[in-house]
Amino acid sequence: MVRYEIAFAGQLVPGAQLESVKANLAKLFQADAPRIALLFSGRRIVIKNNLDAAGAEKYRSTLLRAGALVEVRVMAEDIEEIELAPPPAVAEPEAVSVVTSPAPAGKRLQVLPRDEYMAAFADVDAPDFAIAPLGEDLQDGKPEPQAPPLDLSQFSLAPAGSDMGEIKAAPAAPPPDISHLKLQE
Image (tube, rainbow, N blue to C red; front, side):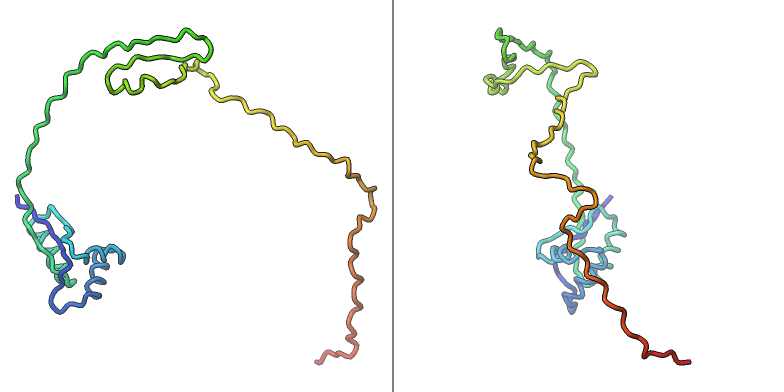
C-alpha cells in the first residue's frame, strides 16, 4: 500500500500575504506564534506522514486554501528487516572472592575484581554495610530540643493594675452644637 507524507518549506500560494497565511496556519494547527515561525524557517518540515492517497489530498487542499504550498511525497516502501544477533551465551557467574580485613576497628570489606572494568574500583575503600534485621529503625533518634540559655534576671513583674507607662488616650472632644439645625416637614 502506498503511503504519503506532507512537507512544508515556507512557500506561499502566489498572491497570498505572509501574515494572513501565518494566521490561517495558526488557526488550522492551533499553534502559537513561535511554532508557526518554525514552519517559515525555510527548512523542509514534514507536517504529517503515513497517509493514504485520500488523506494526503485532503491535507494538501486544506493547506492550499490556507495559502501554503505543500509537497506531497510518496514514502519509501522499503523497510529493511534487521535480523538481530542471537544473545550471547550466559556463562555461569564466577565466584567472587571475598576477603575480610582482620582489623576489627572500622570494619571494611575487600572484594577482588571480577573483570578489567571492575579492577578500576579495586582500591576504593568502602565500609562494609550490613543488612538491618526486620523491623529495625534505621534512623538515629532525634535529640530532645534544648531551651536556649536566657538571662531573665534583669526583668521583673509589675503589680496587678499598675500603670505600665502607657500613653493615655486624649479626652473626647465636646459634641458639636447642633441647636441651630431644624428638621423641615
